[in-house]
Length: 177
Image (cartoon, rainbow, N blue to C red; front, side, top):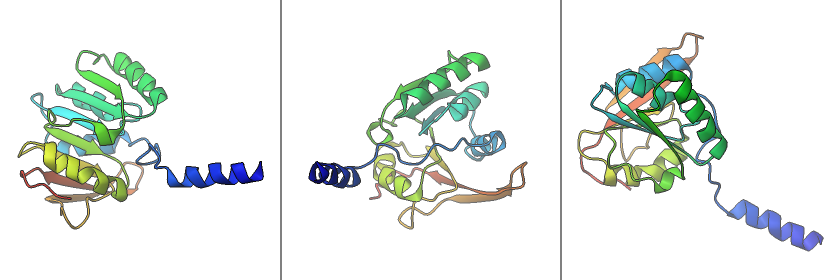
């Protein structure tokens, strides 16, 4: 029995986790700053990979954009739907239980991320392959690595006094691994 337990533990350590980052909600003022940095307007389609409780797609919908939230955790998607209903934007948002690594982001004009740098690096080839030139990617706190330097870096203090760094990239049609 101990041997079987050791094998199960070893396999658990070798299998990739579905999560690209722990769930940490983005503060409201950071959400607004991310959308400002991306210059989100009513003509945009905003995809939030790892959407948690849906606050970024909901905030984008309040600006008139369409929002699509993706999270692998079904409970987060339930929360997202409830939050969208409370905000009165259910007609402008969609939430999906899906692995961010398998999403077709080609309809997006903006992609938002609050994932780890290692996760951003995993997503980078998909983003640069699928996004149309001019699409924007905004990441809270974590870069895409040296292979895709940010077009703009925004460092500011939140309402709580925390220093936050946001990164903005514009897709240019060049695929990056």
